[in-house]
Length: 144
Length: 145
Image (cartoon, rainbow over all chains, first blue to last red; front, side, top):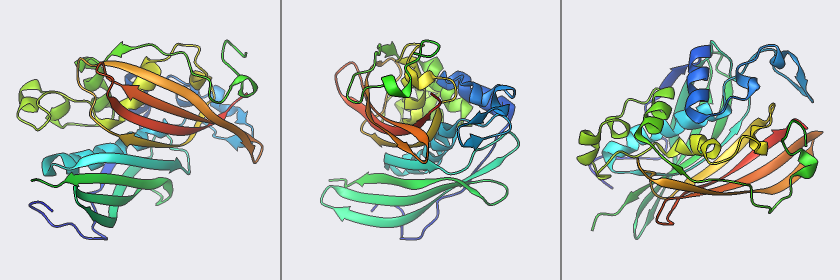
């Protein structure tokens, strides 16, 4: 494939990221997403239909961005291309949570133009609860 | 309308959302990259970026998280306070580059009620100034109203 081997079941290096009110604010300012879900404790004492959070939560897309960060940090030096990410949020993330972002190779597909790698991806917290999970794809174009 | 935002009942699947083009600056890329703890000089250092296959500073793929707000007005229903993100899927075609003029085509694809929650599915495609697709994504949101 390239100057390295990749097999089904291989794990990429885990990325650890601590969520604080400061990281939530930085993400909100960088993404222009200032929804009170992420900043206003009084607002978050309300119930949201069937959902109640009891305090501010991190942006769901923080986990999404951390998964792409983990994948691209590994792919870029290896000339791989991050092609797709699908993720669902399963639990809220709150200030004080430590996120662990992981990916494992679930399938390697060889095509005439290169290799397509499918990853199972997940974001866990310090209680070993899965807060987000999904699937990602990367391409290693064949070098002619 | 509630506080100027369309409610679930007023969102029309298929109808284009109002959007505007933005120039993606190095500063916006760096700010976004830093907010997720990114340290790869590909996103910050022009000299380093020139030595890579990209030839210049690019944005992390997830820059669409910023662009979706940067390219829509303050009254866009995605900004309705209390909007909850349930899941997203994005396909990445080419990187967005510093200096690109980014255009967004966006619409609701679907709306439905599940377990008493109001869902809207949105679809978004970002283009550069050459008309090339940068990325396309779909999201499932739970609406507050």
